[in-house]
Structures are given as structure tokens and as C-alpha cells.
Amino acid sequence: MTTLSCDFGFKVEEENRYEVEAKMWHHAIHDHADMLKSMTIEQLTQWLMGKDKQLGDSLAIHQEVEFAASPNRIYEVLTDAAQFSKVSGGAPTEITPEAGGSFSCFGGMIVAP
Image (cartoon, rainbow, N blue to C red; front, side, top):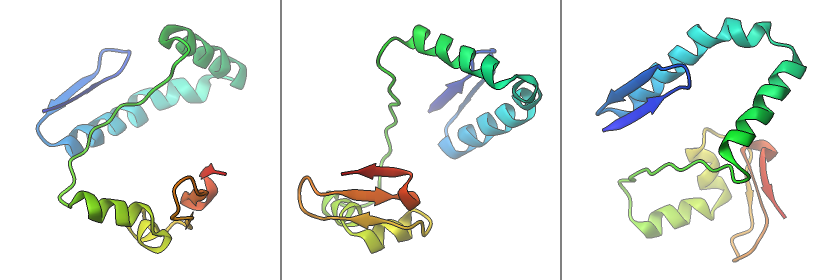
């Protein structure tokens, strides 16, 4: 069972996590778009700063996913640039496979020296 909710009381609970995520995205786009479009950058900045105060100093996203693959296969995909690029939609990827090596994923959106 997957459950997602927003600060404005919208809640989705379903067995199919993809359906839950789809319903939450649909809600966010259709029900909050006008509010977000009407806010200035300064207002959005203040709102985000307020969210940080509510959440404290540590911001974390926790998600658990079950893969139908062995741990070795997952490690192989995560440490091979061509395979990672393929499973992540074809975005440019650079991975140094050695422990502690650098990487750049999703066309440079995520990087580590």
C-alpha cells in the first residue's frame, strides 16, 4: 500500500504506487498550478524558507523500491555509464567505476567530484 498526501489535505492511498504518484502529480498540477503561478519569486522564496523551518536543518527524501533484479545486476547498472544512461532514459552519464570515483548523471544534473 502506498500513501501520499499534500499540506492541503489531498490524500491518495492505493496498492499501485504508480497510480498513487500519477494521482498526486495530477492533483499538484491541476489544483496548485494557479496558486504557484500567482506567487512572485520572493513569495515562493519565503514559502520555501518556511518549509525549511518546519522540516528542520535536515531535508531528506526516503523512498523504498523493490527491484526484480539481483544486487549484483543493480550494482553493474549503477557503475556502468552506458547501462545507467539506458535505464535512466538516455540522459548523458559519466561514471568512474572505482570506489570513490567521480560521476555525472542526467546530463550533469547530479554530479560528484
